[in-house]
Length: 222
Ligand SMILES: [Zn+2]
Image 1 (cartoon, rainbow, N blue to C red):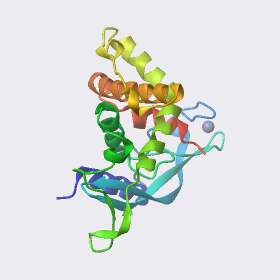
Image 2: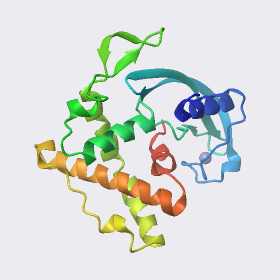
Image 3: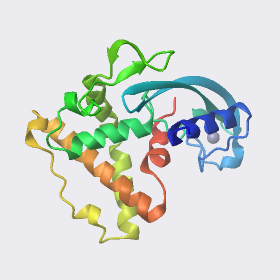
């Protein structure tokens, strides 16, 4: 059986290829008019990576480009499994990042291992391609994205507060182990990332939606 993540990518890619994909934007981000004016404009191929057990797998996916008929703006809309500027899919980025944040004993080097063993890039035969492995520097860099989602984090908290002002997300203390940062800047980044993940869960419980596709795509326009 195909893992759910791969099935989701294949479904989306097929919908773009067959032009049956629907635009999830509510309004054009440039002129603010309704989605009725957004048309599928173009598509492009992107290679995404994801980690399954001890392998980094690759899959090529079609992404949709939308055009507003009123103002002419064109947007690439990232599907839920993709994050802007990230080659790895949302599931892999969030799973490994969250695990790093939550488990005090994990260093970046340990957090990219699977059962203490390195994760290899998959070759044609389904085994390792060569000696290259998933690097701890990759995980380190993923956090810059969460730092860039500061408006997203605040907006998510605002929505949660409106719906449930007593939500645990405002009371929960989410400490970051002090050996995980050397600068105050990094400490704040890791703390905010943790709160983003906490808000993500709360948003899912309250609204049945995810923080990442709903908001992060708004930052992905080129
Ligand atoms: Zn427009």
